[in-house]
Amino acid sequence: MKNLFLFILLAFAGILRAQTSTNSAGSGNYNATATWTSPKDLTGTANILNGHTVTVPAYNIVYSNKITFAGNAKLVFDGPTSKWIPASVLNASPTTESINNSSNWYATSVWAGDAYGVTHYTPWIDSGQGWSAGTAFNGTDYLQYDLRSPKWIQGIVTQGRANMDQWVSSGKIEVSPDNTNWITVFTSRALNTDRNTKVSVNFPQVMFARYVRVTPTVVPSHASMRLGILLRDNGFKSCKEILTTFPNSSSGVYTIDPDGSTGTLPSTSCYCDMTTDGGGWTLVLNYLHAGNTNPALVVKTTSLPLLGSTTLGGDESGSSTTWGHASSSYLNSFTFTELRFYGKTSYHSRVINFKTSHANTISYFKTGTGSMTGIASSFTPLTGHSAYLPNSTANYFTDQGNSSMTEFPFWLNGTYHWGIKGGTNRWEVDDFPASFAYNTYHQIWIR
Image 1 (cartoon, one colour):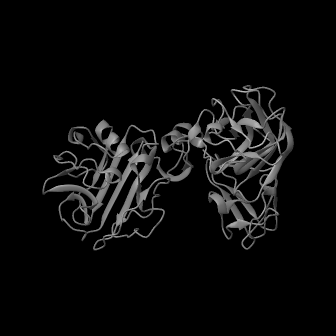
Image 2 (tube, rainbow, N blue to C red):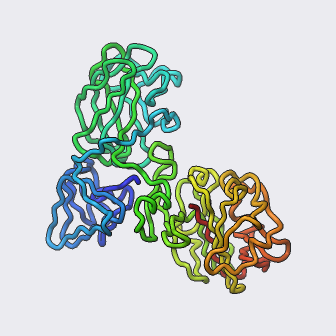
């Protein structure tokens, strides 16, 4: 996973937890009032101040060369899988971001000084050309890569221009978490001596940053190059991957990266059910709805809903974290072969709880096109399942796009329905009240 060290960067990613503070000072002092202003302590000394407890969640890693404690300050590791590793310990086989992946690059935000237009803007590793600066060499043009979210990085990999004898012999390398505060890793570091040889450059220590900038300092003819980023850690793509790697994982909130460290999507928090039917389930739809209310649904395009209350009668419609469902395109970025449906209502005591590997349903939810036709004979009931659906299903809405999981994807005409604000106002679980009068709870999980 994209492990986040946030003694001093909690405001950016929110993985580490503290009892009384949400940010840190530029000095590295962890306190409740200071504003973090400088990246100079990204992996230097982290000072936890008196009265503060910082918790490192399970499966997260702290990279720091030194940690100091004042008074009764504490550092808590939440289980045997959370670790502190010196920032000077690098990965011998790091994952490379952007290699052969043009979609990771955005010309409007990651380059400066290119006067040649998009035909000269192919800066990813192994592209057919490369990035060329606006002038042969002026000492200020640079190539900058945006990782889309702060990550642990340990270096860069570079090439020259593929179709001409142009490369950067040496370059200034800088990193930043916010594109405002920058730290210089190397003032002038030797890079390429030919067109295509990949040169990997490790930093002296692991850095936590979103942006990486290379400014040519020595060029043989014209400043041209291709660039990739060396990531410190490999990312988990799902709860199933986490459980496979750590079989004793417990249910809770984790950080995953659905399209992997080389994809364009940022990492996200998710809720993992590590117990039901063997565990490894990732929550992708969660609606705890209070009766006599008809709130709007929330379609999430780069994040997932977390698990909140599971008690009927609760109203989570105002929650930005527990209310919502994944869009079709976002769901398509996940690799999964199973779905699990769960639903209950105050209208009756029956419970929907089943899993399925039904190809039509998985395709429908991932694309928004098609339907759940055939689900009635392609499911496995799980513990507590007592509903008539999906066995009695005979009707299906089709081609509902981002509403494929909510707009009556399976139902029996005039009798039993799965509907989440279906038809604009119907909240139904294995029934047909044709209204929003009852408390309902809907979940969908993937594995």
